[in-house]
Length: 65
Image (cartoon, rainbow, N blue to C red):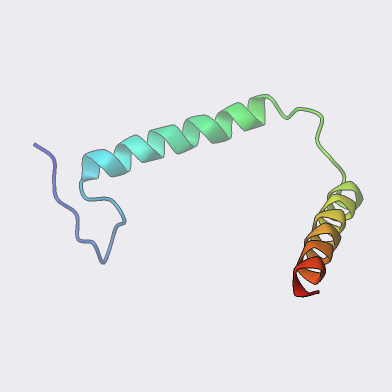
């Protein structure tokens, strides 16, 4: 039987759900640490984000016309 958690204290209904999420989350983090991939520099990320924002602004401007 699983212990019910107070919704004010936890976003999970039961301790079993909280423990399951914790195991899943830790596994995801460990996988990411073990397989860092290529990665991107801060400048590359910011350039990409700036492009996304500019495209969204252009679409918004087109809608207003």
